[in-house]
Length: 229
Length: 298
Image 1 (cartoon, one colour):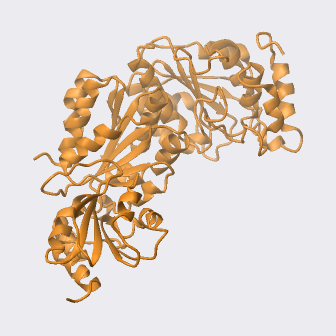
Image 2 (image 1 turned 90 degrees about the horizontal axis):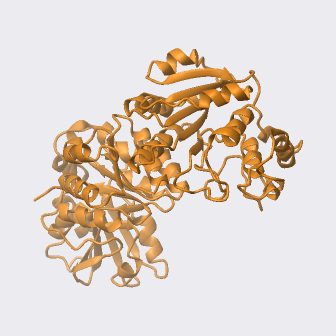
Image 3 (image 1 turned 135 degrees about the vertical axis):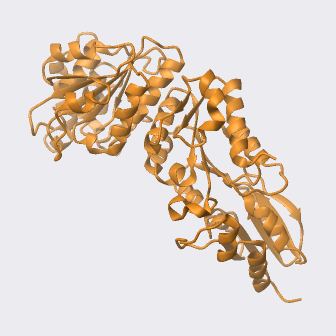
């Protein structure tokens, strides 16, 4: 597979290779399009040098259902596609929550909800402290993940630190039992620039991800149908 | 004499100036010590407000980017409230960082149980790889911080309002033998040293001093506790917090082991730390009574 010309169809084939029927509950479709747009169009990360200091950062905070993420990373050449065959297996590297010590391209070990957004603020501050002004930090959260109070600490904090280099991506598959919206009013009231887009519309996602202000963090809410996991 | 909190503030402020890879994340506690550092280096000395989970998460983000992150709050809000962030963001992710909790056990006695943290050292030991340091003096705080802040390992430093009168040569994993005796070995941790020495006056015991639980000077302890002898630890945190490291160090020999520490019960009394010490038997008089009850009558 040529990692330069790989398509989302290739990714879907790779994901099926990982999940199969018996592991379907570990697959995910709600975040696939947003992740694909990030890795295919937005993030500046060299798969052959995934720790390069001048890369963009993506922290996948919710960690749940990482098969799509793994398939995209394999398709882009971060690790061999053969790793997908051993998804969740004892002799493999790919668990149901990603581990930064095991998988190239994984920035943070996540799975316990509510950790990634605070960490992403530290990463965004660190980029600023290092003088890496062009680099960006993205963090992916689920709508239900945002029930966790630590996220709201971070949502309160990020605008007050003027983190224009931070983008929060919310995958809203309407899985929260608590009402989370309306997003623009709720997160926007803390000082974020909030954009709600169709979570399967690649061009709309791309446009939203490219919004970057000097000193205001951006939130992109990718809306997908209820029940899509 | 600088107390441990002042020593922490001064030393970390100096480290910020000396080492551009130091990042400090505060949660409104002790910010007065860092006004100069925050003004000079606002990009890496940050007060996040009263949000300890996010304080540790932000510190982890700095650590992910190669900074030597230092976070700080009162002990219950450093060791207990953000416990999962310490466990996962630092421990599981394999990141180094320094976490300084001030006010262990009942240092802030008049504040009541919400501000007590005698479990701090014990719960930190529950995180694999988390090192636990217990300075007994402001100068020891400074020495231990400088020795460990850049070692790439997660480290909890237990600062105390209570201090010994004199500083010792504090190094992680080093037990210092202060005097030798025949009837028992007494090992004091951090700020318990002075009262332990006072309690042991007139007794024929070895008195030793430790400022770390992990790493622990297992060889040093084994060299002063003979087979069949009595070992007494005097601990500023919950009693038997040191038991796992002490018993592991002496696993090759039968001994008698007693821990004197804070009883495992909530405290509903106020006053000064010395008042609560007397209540729970951790003043010199109370420790002396325990010693005499354990030692042979001569």
